[in-house]
Length: 173
Image (tube, rainbow, N blue to C red; front, side, top):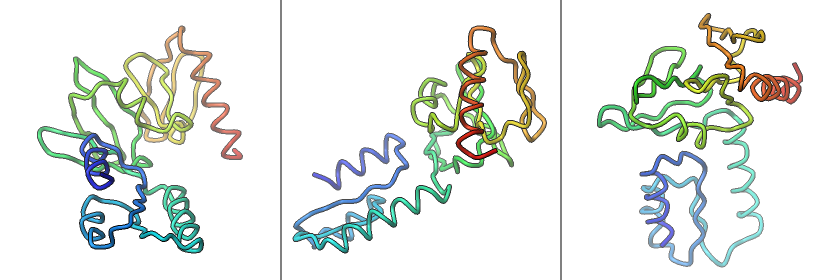
C-alpha cells in the first residue's frame, strides 16, 4: 500500500516530496506519520490536486530539501543547500557542511545517485562538490567558498568544468 511504500522510501533515505492519493480517509493520520507532504482523498477535486502539486513544487524550489543519512546508528537529515562537499576516505564518507562534518559508511556513489546531479559534480574519484559552493576553479583544483581546496583529476576535468559552467549559466551568474 502507499503508506508502507512511503515508509520504505523514507527508511531508504528518500527525502523528496510524497503525495498520497487514496479512497480511505481514515488512514490520513497514518499517512502523515509516514512523512508525506499531502494526503488526498478520492474522488479527487481538481483544485485540491493542483494546489498540492503547486505547494510541492514551491517546497522543492525553496531549497529546504534534506538528505537522510545514517551516521553512527543515528538517522540525520542534512539540508542539501548546506552541503559543501562529500569526501570518501578509507570506506567512510564525510559530508562537509557549513557547520560540521558527518561521517557515514555510505558510498560516494550512493551520494552521487541521491544528490541532485544539476547541483553536484565530482572533480575527483574521492569528492563530490556542491557547485553552488565553488568560489573558483582552475584546470587542477577547485576552491570552495569556505576556503577548502579539492584537486581536479585529469580524467574528470572536462566533465567537471562542463558541469560547473552549465550550473553557472543556469543560475544566471
